[in-house]
Amino acid sequence: MTTPLRLGIAGLGTVGIGVVKIVRRNAALLALRAGRTIEIVAVCARDKGKERGVSLASCAWEDDPVALARRSDIDVFVELMGGSDGPAKAATEAAIEAGKDVVTANKAMLAHHGQALAEAAEARGHVIRFEAAVAGGIPVMKALTESLAGNEITRVMGVMNGTCNYILTRMQNAGLPYEEVFEEARRLGYLEADPTLDVGGIDAGHKLALLASVAFGTRVSFDGVRIEGIERITIEDIRRAADMGFRIKLLGVARMTARGLEQRMSPCLVPASSPLGQLEGGTNMVVLEGDSVGQIVLRGPGAGEGPTASAVMSDIIDIARGTRLPTFGQPATTLKTARPARVSAPAPYYLRMKLQDKPGALARIATVLGEAGVSIDRMRQYGHEDTTAPVLIVTHKTTRDALDKALPGFSRTGVLAAPPVALRIETV
Ligand SMILES: NC(=O)c1ccc[n+]([C@@H]2O[C@H](COP(=O)([O-])OP(=O)(O)OC[C@H]3O[C@@H](n4cnc5c(N)ncnc54)[C@H](OP(=O)(O)O)[C@@H]3O)[C@@H](O)[C@H]2O)c1
Image: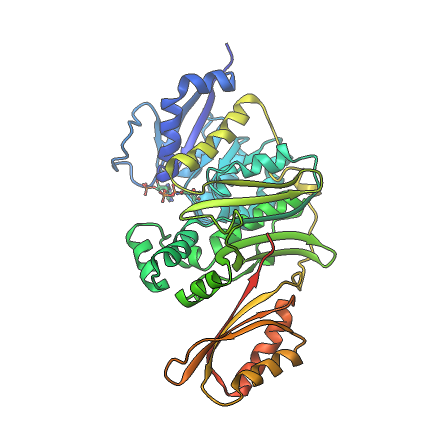
């Protein structure tokens, strides 16, 4: 009889309790698939008295996650508390020192400390697995590190924050302004305690940095992700984009170019008919492109108790089976430091402006763009609103840098009634 795999779970919130439920509900099939039983030996959370909907009477309780991580009767430390530093990092380090394997769903911790943690674990022959940290229930890490291991990855892309996708699609479908849908998302409990993590693109930026590391064999570089949130997207942008056959998505794109590693998380226009354009509500989508396989599209729930716990379990079962992959798909010491690409690959841009109703206003804007080397593909002026007129411009392929150079010039024309909005039109 093989020995059971013994878990210590730190964090009994949405994901932690989801894991407890799967281990209990599917015990028999897990044992068959893993070749050994999986047992929860000890748990830890802040409040021992909290009602959690499951019985934890058979598990030892620890108040301190570091003490849990060091227990001699656990094999795997399952970190489900969250936070980039603090208890999550301290306990993960303690687990590695104590010779445990680690499974975590914590993208913030890995985006900031993944390299050091992976090196420390691998130096001791242990693994850190994080399937649940990127796109929740979608098995994207497994796809990259196993199924597509024979490919040179050329691009990874994705909608990886369900809350932002919920907000953008709800604005689109109900014709509601950003502020109203944001409040609705808050009421429904979809937003993090600090909503800028969601709508500011930071949470999705963490996920993109992890994906890029595995895809391109580079050290995680969260600082190298150019991040822009969805806060400035208006219902007008959503409508104008739809008029032209596009949808607006908070899209992450990473690719290795001759200019260095490009990592962007920003609102982009994508064709309405594309799989990304058709993605509704809180669902996530990750697009992986490899030199042999072509394009793979993975779609599914990016968050929630069941889907996230399902991903955590896949890592636990791998460890139970003896599958021991390096954290980022290759030994952490072999990951290269990527040079961040200063300029993104050229693309057409959507520019929305509000101009003063003055003669020659549009011509002045066109002149500024021309001087910055940005040529116009399409331009449309909408009906006047009081003393201003909305204007929409679609440029030919250009760079964000060229546009950024043009923006101060717009202000000097004296015809802008509000700061312009510039969104990349992504080829997907
Ligand atoms: N929720 C999702 O859908 C989802 C999806 C993907 C990834 N994740 C990631 O999964 C992790 C957990 O998320 P969650 O949604 O399950 O969080 P959560 O519901 O807020 O639960 C956090 C748990 O950690 C415990 N905890 C916090 N600080 C602690 C400390 N200092 N000592 C001991 N326990 C502590 C809390 O204890 P109390 O219960 O006693 O307060 C709680 O049980 C995060 O890294 C998150 O980013 C979540």
